[in-house]
Image (tube, rainbow, N blue to C red; front, side, top):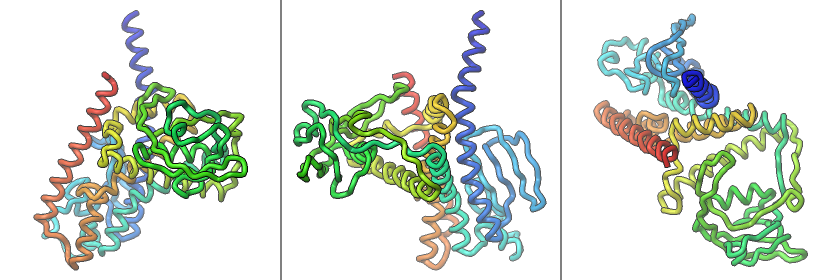
Length: 380
């Protein structure tokens, strides 16, 4: 009986967490690497391998262009390897480079014109952003958008809103001069500004009133029991007060809203990072593969649409991560290309080698830190 229950627990873990995680991550990685592949091929760069996953190859085939398409054993990423690359990070092999003819060098990433190299490298993160817009647009088009008016139903005693003088029935019209249209707009804006004074414009009857308040850093818990820190001002709404509804959107409106949602994730991410450096938020909110797997499993219980929206959020996050100016990442390559554009010649091979090693140390350190956060949440 114990063996049966153990097997059931393993099966439940695999189907509930690992499989959704692998599916979501594989979709994001495939689109990212396909961006590199398509623009690289268009630029005349030869692609040696397209791998979904790292490590030993499980299955694969060669296409008519000589590219090896393969599924590898470790489903935690992927890569496109161009002709002349020493490894999956697209670092050049100097010995191989010296042995190449001019025609062969023209087919390598390092031998391509600067703008082609930059376009090929930037195509991965751009593909991630486009995937996010596509997913959000599709879900808005199919299911509409759930919205509620920014009308206050309740003000919590002793809260920042109460101290500032906000009252039930007030319509939140603007934050720091920017118009807000839904209660979610308020939650999103306030959530990433703990400890930052905000000018709130409310409409109360025929009056328009400006008041200043400061959101307080508050620990909240989502429906799955996950804890997080956000800024809050202490107001609530209800279905009746906020006029909860689902607005139907046409294709153009859905695309516009998909772009807006993607940009919200980008700005929210940068706001969170700036809050860490300013000491307004803790870095323990950063998560690694364990947290992504856990979240994927939890979101999967809400349905395919919710899981796809999680994929959209993670796609933006991975796109932004890859744009960080750290050697090894796409942003690091673009940074070196920018230096080359200014200097008129590439950075020396020795400097590139040092940069790649430093970049690898930085990435490994970030992974260790994020994984430590994941483990701390599990045992905390």
